[in-house]
Image 1: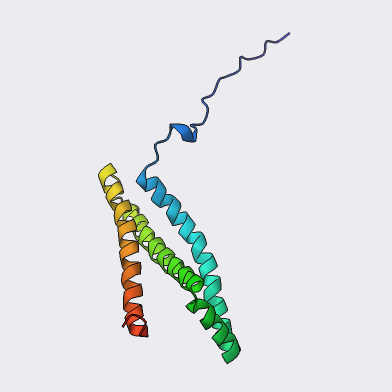
Image 2: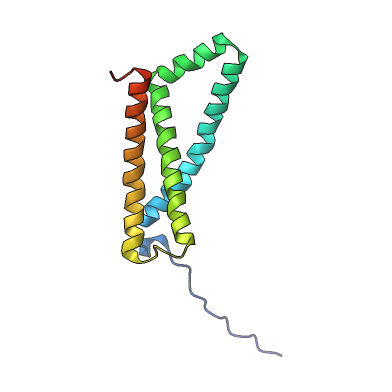
Length: 136
């Protein structure tokens, strides 16, 4: 009777409990989440375009909805997601060149992605508010 080979004990996959939550890991997650947010946000853009093509009543309804605080919050989230995802793409483009992989560089790029996305979103909303006459 042939002997069975001894079972090889393989290492277990590292569990999430042994990982330290890093800022770059969080920004990677935000990049994925903002990608999903953009899918939903572009459905709103399509809804807006269809309403504009349908006629004045449909367009007036979506304009009313987007002027409510919920609509503005959705637009703010969509614009932040668009800017944040774009800056995350620039960060990945930098990595594609082989730069920015040192620990301090990765951390700096992740922080600048967040700071830049918040700053640019606020700047866009402030400028947009003045252009549209809402902040005068």
